[in-house]
Length: 225
Image (cartoon, rainbow, N blue to C red):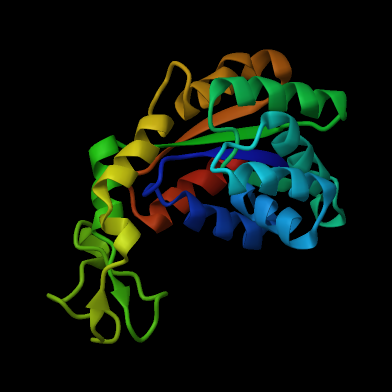
């Protein structure tokens, strides 16, 4: 199955993507990683992208989309893939859809994780990292993984904050792009929602407020329905 995954920063989309990767043995492909791999590998598209990035400019879609298509044609994608982080706006959604059709590549499922903007922001700003193990989940705004004061709930280690998790202006900027349902990322998701039936796709929504386990359970049930 070929899956496109939408969700705001703080929704737990990355966690669910990792779970799907393991359960269904399909690659979880993040757009940022595609850029890094092409630039590091010195591909022609990577060189073109780096020229824009070095100037502080956005990489044009006619470079980004071919990079994505190249990645989706690799051997590990033969049994399916999960694409995360692209498209970021409605225009990119239209172009990606057209490019996939031109390559005779199906898009089977589109997933949207729904989460209130303030809750998403709180989750990001509430994250705390354990100095002993970054994989120990601690978040002051999520009851199920709330730390013990200023100590890790798992091992009792000291907790620290990531600087970018506390950059409120940067979080607001990213969320303003995502939650824009006219031209932004939500508009991209809604583009696929509105054509899902006629294109033979399945469009599903998930309640991002639920626990990781509850979201996974809902997701797997809907995928296997």
